[in-house]
Length: 269
Image 1 (cartoon, rainbow, N blue to C red):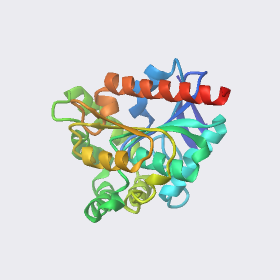
Image 2 (cartoon, rainbow, N blue to C red):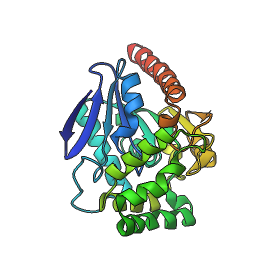
Image 3 (cartoon, rainbow, N blue to C red):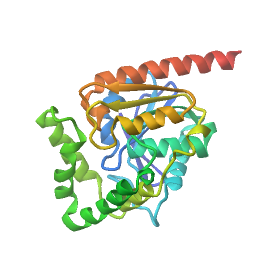
Image 4 (cartoon, rainbow, N blue to C red):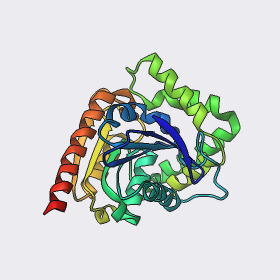
């Protein structure tokens, strides 16, 4: 695994051959969230996970970013790595991935959307709550913020070790102004009217014990997309890819195998 910097973004990479897989993390996370995917899929794919602008080891943005800006930044990473990519997005990262597929369809081979939603703008109460998070982070700081929020990101049955790791990763990843820009982007976004424009084959996954976005939001995504499969991941909370990595990785690998085979046959034909 290697780390490198591009456009002020810190990226983690595993694998040096095969199709490109770009991983976009949640609003309280970083590239560290995809350690299980980097380890499991790097033998067949070039797996790249970013620290979003203003997160962890990436540079702070010089001005506020909209959801379109986050999507365009992801597009630049794909262009820099060549060709197009399969895109895995968790929560906030899933919203970025969906917007990326709308704005830059030629860069997206397929989507894998995990524990996500159409954006917090789909619900005024959730939008207000999202905006309040930035105020909370400013008031109490990243350590206390992470200690308060991280335990709800996993299922009630999650191990104490996973809770500790998620809490520490969040504390090390979130800061202002990047988190505030992401929160406002989420609060301003409602993609329900755009889902029909996405043509990339999509796998939607959700933990059955997700207490943040929940299965209902994932069903909205699955129902609004043309080419989609919807999977419930047993015994997983909002961070299904970290809490049940073997199960999630198996579904990701199956999706990627089917899609890459189909694309290969289509190009030969």
